Image 1 (cartoon, rainbow, N blue to C red):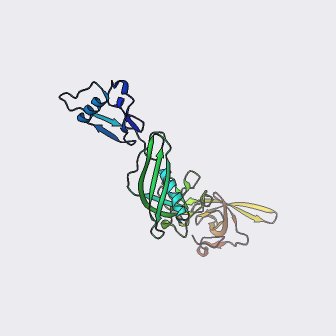
Image 2: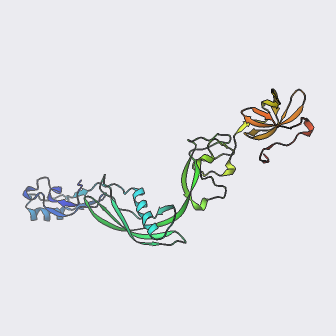
Image 3: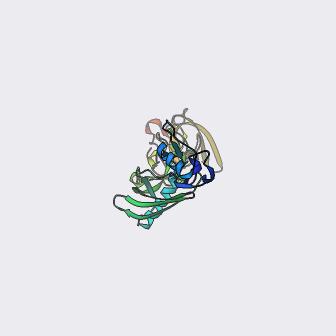
Length: 298
């Protein structure tokens, strides 16, 4: 096992003698290996005066060089810069084709330069030449290609969400998604969803849309509601039963279980509402449908 760009005589023989540091040739690339067979070993030993003979067995030496993959983020960053110089705009999702990129020496930070970039703006397909240089290795030149698609920012779920969940910072995050998946009702800011209630099941990683969330329900249908009635110089509190569910600011019908009269009340807290000013009590068979202050139907 060696970690340098050349093979030396001492890499093949334990007792290489005075020529131990003689350079025999280039080392394998990081992550690769070469095998020196018995006949070649004998020729090298004869040339450098090493007391070694193959004997009857077919012996060989395998020279390996440790290597680490080029970080995906590093190659994508280099390609992204080259694509922008070629006319690509905005944030891009870059998918590289399956070409095998060379490895680099462990713990090294390769320098990656891209040239001869060819980019099709209609399909997003690109092809270019990458030059990869790192300490203790010769620069490697290879062809790379793939597809670059525009992306847009979306709020996505960080884990599976269930209907009724109230969203907090740990439930969602802002990320980039393919513009092909963009929607007119997409949510692009975290402040739009924090504190909202999930209205349908949402899988981890799914982008959120406005139809998936709603104002949190503060009063459930059939719940006992504390009603505040504001009168000049007087505030009266009564109990009622909600005939519909509602969130903050929603107007719901609330029935008095004793008189069976119904009033329209504005939800202003958990199981709490205040009677809509000017609302006249009605009997149960004349109840108004549930609505909110913006006139939205449930």
